[in-house]
Length: 493
Image (cartoon, rainbow, N blue to C red; front, side):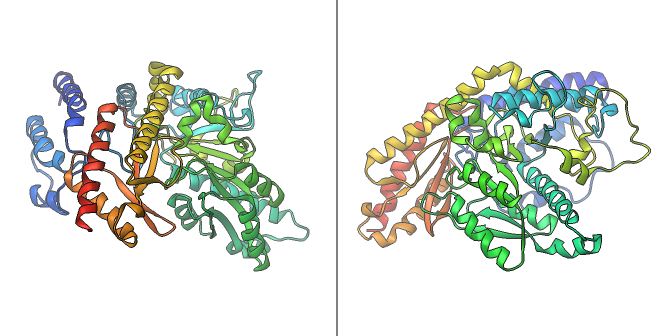
């Protein structure tokens, strides 16, 4: 493909993308193909000779498209949103154009410096404490800073590595401790999560090879100071060494907010690294009215949220800040002669390879820069507020229906609900009714949602947040929920 064909085909692709988004709400959101469908449709070896762009486009439409689940549909209410937007797509296109491998400042100074600047923009936009910013108010270098990771899972791993570095340094500082003594203690390190913490926490522990303790939550599904203290006391009696705790701002199951001030107290007393996972709900902090809910976050060691979930920025873009980068950089730094050092203002010369797991990295700050400039803070806030209002409206309508109950209050864009036992002739059939309701809704195919279990009970999760969703999509969902509930309840009588 030469530049002239690229120009022609590129315009065709832009048109195809625009056509897709214009029609996305009319496409069933969930794929219905069977496992292995694509293997049967595609050749089992790569082509020997070049194939035409037209042929590839036909296969994209006839073979790939049927196997796609349409996360950008306004009728996609599963998991959490994965926001796409036109500004982010355009920024990503420029990133692909430059195609830099930004492991240090010299690779492309703009790639490093834009990330530093934009992460400070973003930190200020969500009201993060100034400890987390790269620059102090006087423009000099701070101890903290932000870095874009691929996902919250990567952010979790990076934070735990930094925490392990901090814990090992503390062990080394003990009187008479030798390197051999410290190595013998590694297997005793234990990290703390609640039973509602996202699975990325356990995955991070698996990766770094530490023990974990899952702390039970109560009826409000929050990790509390008292429960954490009890868990730590029990582990210390067994000779374990607490070193890390994760507090969540907006859990996956219910968007519960852990006792962040209480966790901060325990972390300070026990010398734990305190990480806050705000992967989904962190976007809501762009709106000042939600910031009181994050009280205590200013005392954390690291904070992460995903603009690629609910802040109009295409995957992958996960924002991680640390209050003090020392342990992170110490743990992940690596140098070779082919990574030349550059003299100058160290506030700008960040070797972000030492802030993440891979050495190479994409120019991801471009799409975030495009989004923040083209929407502005007011546009981002409107997106969040509209979604929250729609989720609350839906919940109110379902409660008014009389057959549904909310499991937790709607705080952000997630409604967690179920057919209530009182709506059934046999209340003991409530779990069966709700699992059948989820299946019936997804078999209907017009909308897509998933369920979960809370305290052993089956419930429905409805996550509102599509960039391209409108009240019409919420109206459709409400209609389908009521219709299918009627059928399910009748079928159980």
